[in-house]
Amino acid sequence: MSSKTPVKFILGTHMVGDSIKDPSNAHFDKIEDVKSLLDAFHARGYREIDTSRLYSPEAPGSSEPRLGQAGAASRFTIHTKVYSGHPGDHERAKIEQSIQQSLHDLKTSSVETMFLHVPDRQTPFEETAQAMNDALQQGRFKKFGLSNYTAAEVQRFLEICEDKGYVKPSVYQGNYNAIVRGGEKELFPLLRKHDMAFFAYSPAAGGLFSGHTETSPRWRDDNLLGKMQSTFYGKPPVQAAVATVQAAVEKYGISGHAAALRWTAYHSALDGKYGDGVIFGVSKIEQLPKTLDALEAGPLPDDLADAITALYAVVEGSEPPYHM
Image (tube, rainbow, N blue to C red; front, side):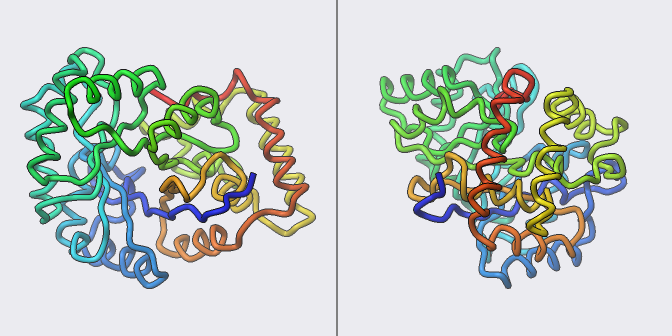
């Protein structure tokens, strides 16, 4: 189901941060390196980046200041996320503090989208929704986003906002690729009903199809992200699916990684007419043009796209959830 309207390509910046505290993930630390990365992305005609108070993964709060010092806000539309991950993080005062710090570090008065990064199920959603609505009304961001919530929780936020007269969430960011498709059943229909866009992170399953998982730092179990990746994608049905794709792409001279990216961009449930986007990251600046070349190459050959689409029937039940 190739999209009639192209999706947006958004640069993820979880790899921008303090390389001393987070050597496994923070590959862009020096401001000149961050500027070079942004320059390269900008030169290809792209204008949207995604970050968070939680980036980089093992040095939270170190990504936004570097983007700010690199002048990102003057050239890019920025999507960021409220500090999350602990019970109570979405209390009103903490949300206000997180948003204020994000804007300060990014050196801007407003961003495009402010996401709730990870659900805080201890704090009442009513309190969280009010805090986000108030900040939006104050002009601190234009769109309220949800990330990693279940479909039922998205529905609850929509109901609260409708009941209270708050601005509703209009963007959802979640894990989505050829392996992780659980959101297609309940989440996507809900988003479409309420005109919410979907930003897909991990569109190539974290490099799962690259054939380099044994050597890549992002798959080592000595860091948080590596442990998550191994846990998410380590089950036998998933590994078998990877082997199937790697065999299928050979006759086309396309890498498994590029094929996985292109499937998510052109053959998935994503559609640019809803404002959908694909968020990708790179660990080296040389990977940026290669990744964009792959994304810009367009839809896959039909039989290859069909083969990748068919993977989900094999892995369903063993795949990672779309939510946290």
